[in-house]
Length: 228
Image (tube, rainbow, N blue to C red; front, top):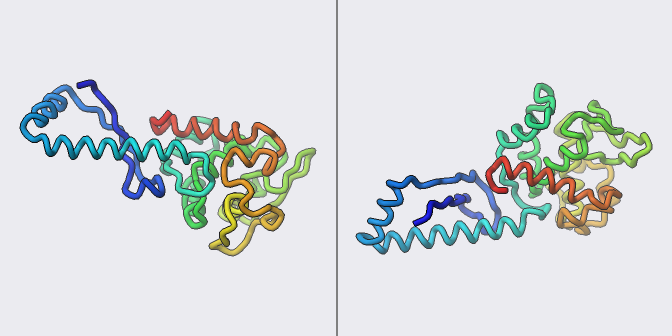
């Protein structure tokens, strides 16, 4: 039997891919024990085979939904911090952002992986080398239209993240917001017009490769999880 790896996805993955993803690699002795088990306990082997098939079905479903704005992300706070660290982000200032993104995204039902990677693109991994300044707490270039236009400002980091999540929700669905509105441009969006990441190009930003740039960062994140 060839050595194999199985992605373990938490319960409820058929509707929302959530939880910790663990790679398990069997040793030679475990493989021998498994082979013996096939002979002595075929029922248990069949049960295990069905579990593995379910895992593969969940993984396939997740691949097909990874670009949807609505849904749950799969990256932990530690993994999001690692992405920032590998790209020289100032964690001494923004070390709490992964927690804020996961929490605010979960409240509104937005995929925090996509929202976080969008922030990484918009801020240059929190270097703020564009028109928006760090003190604006604007992590998604809301209102920044280029040519020195700095865009909107927010009172603190959480409010800035919340505005981004609400703006994403405006594009993703016609469902009402859970929290009070803080996004000053929410009503300018045609509700539900961009439920997929690929549909943000030309809407959120004029750059026709906007979605591809976010997806490239998303793939780097998933590479850290061992999924790419």
